[in-house]
Amino acid sequence: MEVKLHDIGEGMTEANVNHFLVKAGDTVKADQPLVEVQTDKMTAEIPAPFSGVIKELRVDEGETIPVGTTVLLMEKGGAAPDEIPHQKPQGVRARRVLASPYTRKIARENGVDLESITGSGAGGRILDEDVFAFIEGPGNGVTETEPDLVAVDKVEPVHRAGSEKDGDVIPFRGRRKGIAAKMTHSLQTVAHCTHFEEIDVSNLLRWKETLKEGGQSVSMGAYFIKVISVCLKEFPIFNAVLDEQNECVRLKREHHIGMAVDTDDGLIVPVIKNVESKTMKTIHKEMKELTVKAVENKLSIKEMTGGTFTVSNVGPLNGSIGATPIINEPEVGLLAFHKTKKRPVVNDQDEIVIRSMMNVSMSFDHRIIDGGTAVRFTNRLRDLIEEPQTMLVELI
Image (cartoon, rainbow, N blue to C red; front, side, top):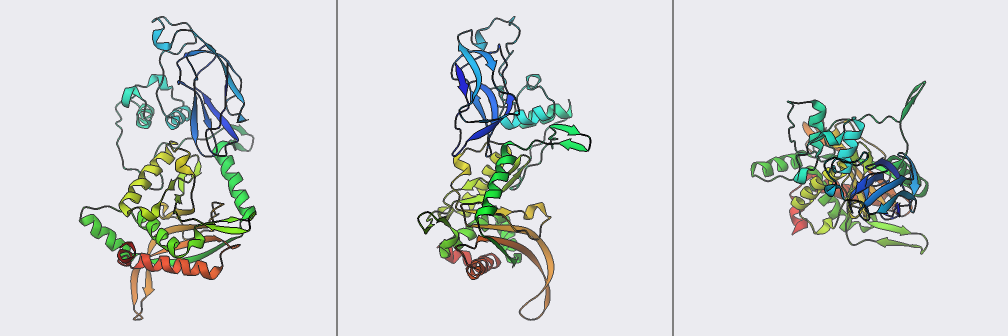
């Protein structure tokens, strides 16, 4: 029987074959992962449709194939792995390795054989930290750390596909190829315009510390996303889609905010749904969960689609004062928050004071939004951030 690449995501047309988890002659169980593939949005495993024997691998690792391509051939029958006697014939795996696609990726890129590792997860599942501990060698413990909202520290793999006389060669496929296509399409379709604003976040930082002293924790990122939702209610043109075919602009009632996450495999944008009806605590919790999933390649298609506006918080990277972000088309707006820095500022009394200042970059689709509207949007955003107590009135 042919096992084919099926559509594992909305709009998917092709995928890159990352790594085969079986070889010809292996006996497998139903639902056992056979091959790991990478689309422009996610990494996924294709499972065995039934118990049987692998007869032939029909594509090569590293190959990009369209949906419907036969990946391998299987034959029904043969003993399931758990029923095979202790002296197993050559070619049959000693045990099924339980590990996520991202964990397999870490192991593969660091030359680690997962069958040499004892997993500490449920059912013997091999976790990322198990691989790191194996790489570091015996005696080196693994310390659990809370993941950052932008990226998670981990072993930095070297992505080499080969080398030439004048340098190394890295592959241009999978997510990176998908990102390239999407960004190019956006630049060729949307009339990009970007303007900049500076915001005093001194009061917001004090408010955040007050909450912390009271035993509550809400990130600035969660506050920014909720503030954006308030602004989108007042300026719905930024939460819209241009329907050129029907010559109209469709305003969206629900605020599905995408948040750009930087990963080793490239930029990915998980979406927090219905921000308009969620508390900042809930937004904070979902941000953390989605960020970890993004870094570990565990996001579902549902968690990566349906966005109506995107936010990029590059401030925690501490290296950006401005940018011209590319809009996540068909959305019409994207707001980037940059690093916060203490600067001398002249206040209303003509006094020079030290304040914590942050820059923002606002990209919008000039086909349907005028510059004045964009300025009024960021002015409202600035006011809500500079005086956080005003949010109480908005949320009542």
